[in-house]
Figure 1 (cartoon, rainbow, N blue to C red):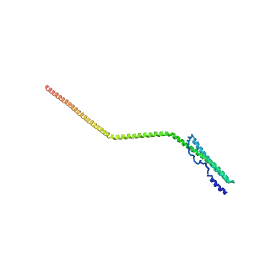
Figure 2: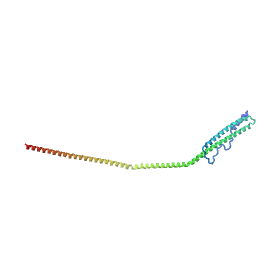
Figure 3: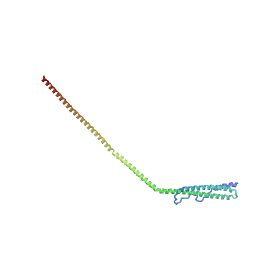
Length: 241
């Protein structure tokens, strides 16, 4: 019984050592050949297959460990314990190596998908590069034209402001002269209107004076006629007496 207690820990420690084929632990280096583009649905198929291989590897490891535990336990009831344990270890190692092979295949498939996707993206980027470069050139040309247009517009506005500043005194002088002419013209119109009003008043006064003289003459003649008639009437009356 003591021998069984001593051997079992050693057997459990030995199960941690995996015999891995050389180079399987490291991912293969990228080859120099061009990767074929992925067909529609091929990436999903490869990923699914890789997941299945990993699941198989996990199940195979569990089966190897469980089988080893069962075999090691049975070995302690046999006479040749050491030889029996060696056989159990070999069987576990075989299954573990097979599980590792499945993992390596799954990793290789994942890596192939990544590399082919990267190659496909690079190919698409290379195909789109001329379009992007042309679009970038068009954008650059458009931006340059817009910048030149903005610069020209700013220069035009600056020139207009400078011209306005230079012409401002002349405009102010011209405006003052215009207002002065308008004021002079208004004063002349007022003076002419006043003169016309004065002339009209003088003419009206002369007309009234003329009419007054005519009225006075008519009154004088009427008075003289009446006086003459009165004298004539008086003379006739004397003769009658």
